[in-house]
Length: 241
Image 1 (cartoon, rainbow, N blue to C red):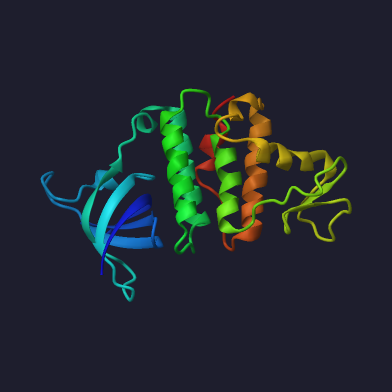
Image 2: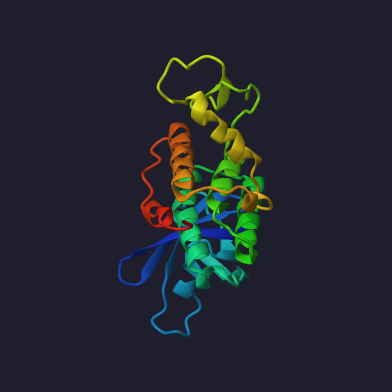
């Protein structure tokens, strides 16, 4: 069955001498993997440049449900980035986001609101002229709304604990070790008040921002099995001092 769809490249891996396996998030069918042969000349139809992390594509492909690796038909850039590739801070954020999404969307099927949120976030980053130092914090926290464990802010009062397993505030210390003490639980409500339009108003030191990243990733690891350590995190933590 021929399918036309938008897609976001998550990662590409060399397979043999002249092939790539490309993992993408499609708007209509969620996560899919493709295999393609790279041309030996620059005049070939498929170019490796199409498969850089977070490239936004328009695809046509013949969907075969029994196939683990699909094959591209027509493929082209859906939205050409204007600044991400040329701005060191934005590029580092994008590389982190691509690695994060590779794991966070691993089992996603049809989820058009999720796709639209990710696509819109990337376009916002590409067009941003204000500070984007908190982009990854907002992006990760609000992504949880689309994959099922958005924090519940009811019960967020002074002195409340935050239960990381259940995503809720509580006046009693949870009977397990995965919680934030009242002195740090307010970070969650602060993060939830942030969005791309107002995040430049929330001033954080580099250690404060890095602590928020660690807490968010810990939260994801509690809710997504086998969520690994992020290789791109150390580079990101050195930015936006």
